[in-house]
Image (cartoon, rainbow, N blue to C red; front, side, top):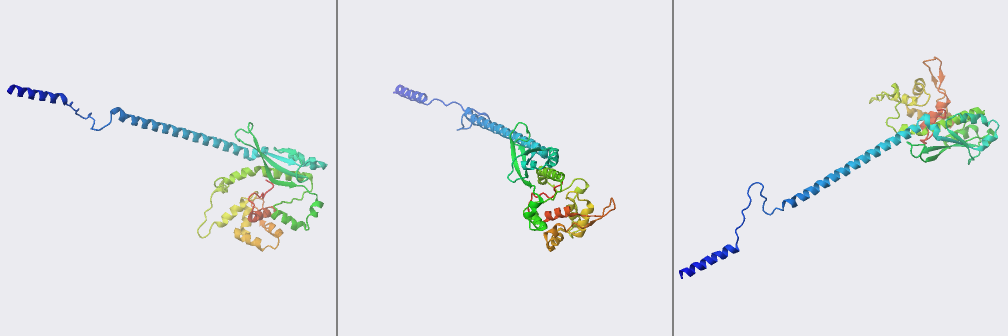
Length: 336
């Protein structure tokens, strides 16, 4: 019995050791992975994907930055080329004068056509909507940086010059002075009385130059502080809280008109110390002709020659139109 009991116990111990193998020892130390953590290869794969994505994003950002810089450089080059085309010494080359063939019927027309040919602009003889009229058009290249290898954009200017005989002009006016004022102010039409073909040629040349330079002047006005003149006169004027210095500013503004000396500007500012006083004087005039010539007889003392002269009707007209006109494109001076 004792032997059989020992055999039974030995067989039970063998069965237990055979069904439950001994567990392997767990690794110890800092390199041991915590329980429930994924395998090392699976944990490293998402990090590599994130790094690759960040590198691609940085590459795309650098590419976009390079494209923006290239676009800005190209726009600056084109703007600089367009600015060079609009400069006064080159703008005449872009303008074309279109002359109605009816001018050729007059025997003395070759005199003013020679004056037109002396300009650096093109001119052609084309039938116009109004007989014996002149129009202008501007031929601008679509790509200013390469004017010889690109399409040309043609823009029609809005000015029209019509030649009328005195008898035909007077038939359309019931009063020589009053209808002329109506044409100048309400019709935005400037009337010039010329005696010879030579004077007509000089007038056409002056008007052509003024039209050609208009885009250049418009670009200047768009720049910051475009109203400041060059040299010493470009310095700012200090205006105190009590109004001291406003008279100097008003005189400086008058001096910005073409061909206006400091003495002439001072004479006008002394007669009318502020713009509001000048506007009030215009309102007190009874006729438009009186308004146009309001400043004509103001005496001006010359510091150079010592001889006194007057403001004159031309400057008086320009200042009046500047003060009352609502047309931003109105050409005040036709002799520039």
